Image (cartoon, rainbow, N blue to C red; front, side):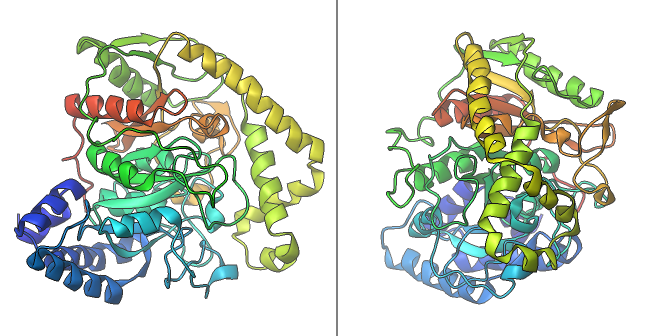
Length: 471
């Protein structure tokens, strides 16, 4: 393995350590990742905008800072990718939409600014579905992103570009966001780690209207430790986001290795309503129950959660149309064609329907909280199926021989956007077709630390880091 190959597969923690010690220079690190991007991105379409000029200048300044003995940030000189619905000052911000094709962000989002202060170097922006609305990564501006494990298949979405970039060594860490599974879904389909923090843990400002009570910002990484360190740097209150939570008072990174063996895990293969591919059930069940062989307390449970799929559609459509009301007809002329199939629904959704969705969130929480009266974590498949062919669109209309809606395959992720709970997707195995499968770990309210510790326990016992896509 060449030095450049060693660099691109290092974790962010390892890169920061080697940069601070002088074993690696930020310039050679940035050079190694751009070399990788230029080699494989044209085929995969994970990055849609590169910030090479500014990144190289920042790398040179970072190298001088190391040599001068200045105090360095925790991620000094470490490259990162940023999803293209996250503001980075002075960089094109398109949301994957022709409506925003020439837009340039005026300032950094809060968590981007915090990561910059910690020393990261932004390599560029990654692909997403238009406005991040659907769980596959395709849009009218840049086209589809391809799954590196099988380039005929989707990487999932909406943070698909970020997940592909991390999975293929185009960057060590990336930023995504999650309003219904948009971090966990592509992490599962691409074989990397993704964390959806609790609603409000990472402030969201500035951002487009919509998703205020559903969406969160979060990390996509190859190791749990990298995500924990990013959480230490990104989390914390900011009055510009009225939903932001008080500081947790703990370091996720420093407390990561505490054992979770005194915790109790419940595994559900279907939450009581989901149609699931039998191979996905077999892989996730085996992964979940194998924790018991290592001394963890794990039980398979039967649940009867309310199915909120219609509520998810009502909320997404209502908020999207409301946010774009003044330009809706203009947008329809250039929108991703699939969107035209559901935007018309807004004319048939009453205000009372939207309010009923908020009431049903309470019904869902009443069911969910009963699990946490007995267990510390809920384990489920991250997605109901592995990656599917690109031409299928948003999703298949049949799973395990049962007719389903095209979004039913994300049945396991969006419930916990409604409740706000933290959840991760950890790689837990491969199908016979060599496609990754993710296990979702859902924590109780506000317990990102517990989710990270449980994810780390799984990572130590069933390591995934060295499993790389055939690129």
